[in-house]
Image (cartoon, rainbow, N blue to C red; front, side, top):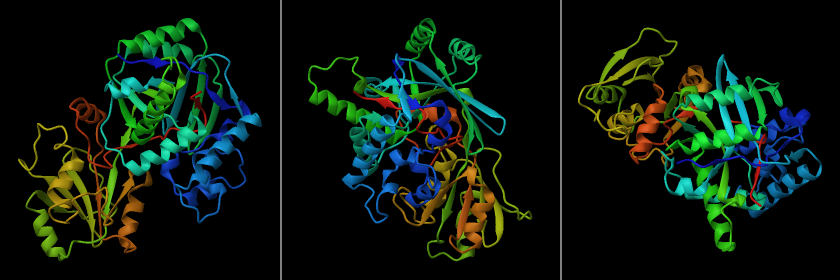
Length: 414
């Protein structure tokens, strides 16, 4: 059963929250981050991407980057940009984008729940990315970016959360066209009841943040080794999360761009595609976004096509094989285009649906890419089914929006 705990958040002063809050470190380049923080010394990117305060030539994994992150965090705490709550609290984080609202509980989760698979995963992690965040967490002695968890909707939890957002929010501002609100849950009885209700939930699922969660767990295990007489109440046994009910979540399409046709002529390529897909050339040149599973958009040589997977070309009983991203990979990207491992291939790129179909098409029109595919979004139930089966999704299967901002909550490990 899930262990969900309140904690004493280190968080920005009310009037500085909008200036501090920043997009996650892994959705932008260092160059983009440097541009974002111009004129804003409070941005959390000074902590999450501390290389922006060092020479542009520095290696991202240089030890000085982590030392700078630690120093920037300490300085902002000393300068009272951040304050720490006096007692452990829960927090409610609500985001509204284009009329859709998701409301989550900010808390800490147990590293043992992660290890025992109460917190379920659906992605592989990369060792280099793990080591980066391990060092960042260790040097900062804190979880600085929340992990995005989901759970099957619970009416009693929803009721308590709705009761807690009747008051005026602690934070309210717009960032990246998303309305951001935060409330504090200070009532001890409500806090205890929320903990009790989550203890009856058998499974939590990582929606986004596999590298951050794995790294937080690894730091916790290292701290246990260096503190053999540790108490289970020590903060390094827990890590920062935001828990959203599954019904609130919105997964967007995660589209594909390919650099070449793998030495095939256009005619040869289209003929090979037709072996596994029904191929329909479209008159409309404005683009095609699939509206149902097993269909794909394809842009090639100034023309859009609709692809529909043929029957019996995939295993509909297998939760991984029936994903649209798997069907495209197994029946086209791999066998026809020779992209056997999209995680490492330099011939494929990915574009989140938030960027729009126009950006995707422009990449091909500008001859940066030869081919583009638009995808039908993966469903949250697919994610849960795969995690329940102990399987993993293909890379770049889900794109969640809106992104959780970093800097509104910091969880200190000691």
